[in-house]
Structure formats: C-alpha cells, structure tokens
Image 1 (cartoon, one colour):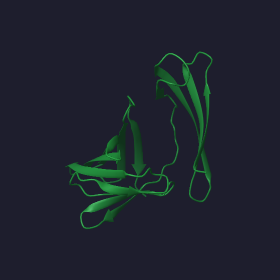
Image 2 (cartoon, helix red, strand yellow):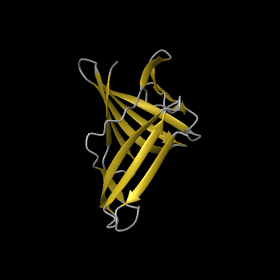
Image 3 (tube, rainbow, N blue to C red):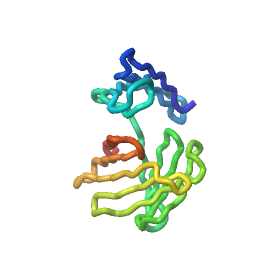
Image 4 (cartoon, rainbow, N blue to C red):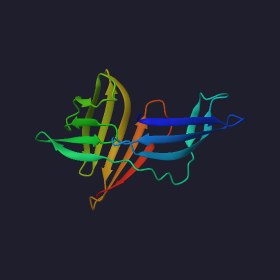
Length: 160
C-alpha cells in the first residue's frame, strides 16, 4: 500500500477533510489531516477546493543527482519515481512502479537559480513546475501548477 485517504464532506458541502496516510518504501506511515474549503461547484465532492490546512508539516524527500553529462535526475524514494532530464526542452522518460505508461518530463533553464519542468503522460501536459534554489543553495522551492487546479502546490526543501 502506498497511500490511504479517508474523505469526509461537511453537511453543507463547503468543507472536505482528508485523513491522508502515506507509506514509505519500508512501510512506515506518515499521516496528515488536510482541510479543504470549496471554491467552486455546488454539491457533493466535485468542485474546486483550496487547502486550508494550517502549517502542513508533512515530510517529502527528494534526491537530485547528476544525469548523463548535462542533466539531472529527480528521485522520490517514497514512490520509486525517477525523472531524468536535460535542460534542452526535449522529453525524457520518467520511470517508477506507480507512474502511468508514457510518463515523460522535460526541462528548461530559466536563469542561474531557476528551472522550469513539464511533466506529461502520453504527450499530454499534467503539470508544470518552477524549481528555484536560494542564492545560498540551501533551500529549493518548487511551485507546482497541476492542470485543472486553480492554485499551485508549494513545496519547500531544505538541503541536508
């Protein structure tokens, strides 16, 4: 099992809670209780929602390693996914046991501290990301724009 989530919709349909549990490769569980408010839609689970969970302090590990001569590999150990890419805008295969067939990523260098990444499945864009490293190279900020989601997801990583 990789994840477990129990969703509960408030009686008025305005609030959705998500008891989300993720499991790492060794089977250790990490649980976060998310709260989302409705932004659009009129009834039931369907609609646009915004995460209002205060100080969500979940842990997400990301490894970045050199790939070939001038590329990088982005590895998420929890799900075994690897995205290899160069900064030439061309698609490269992404691999992992939970990625759909046809998963690919491409990247462009925006400036010395910023990269733009696009993830696709069978040629269709599923998200774009801006990865920015701080001037002291100790913090990586990932701003993820998922297709169909109004507000981006923001992840901040500290270098270990």
